[in-house]
Image (tube, rainbow, N blue to C red):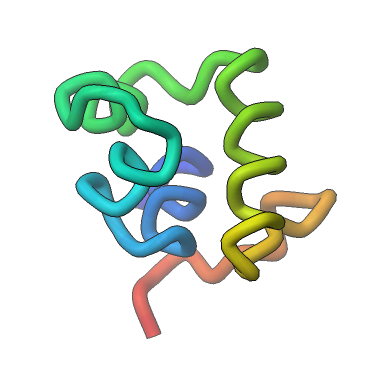
Length: 68
């Protein structure tokens, strides 16, 4: 079963890509798969994703639950 955090991370290119995108440690991004993405980090991710041309939908459940 995929979590919302996993779907967001997958949408943005994976753990390493997200870490580079927001200049965070890979271990931090990886931990979100288990604990979820903190609201302040989600706000940052939304801005970074939009700037990178991969905007997140307002309703994150619209993201595919499995990699295409």
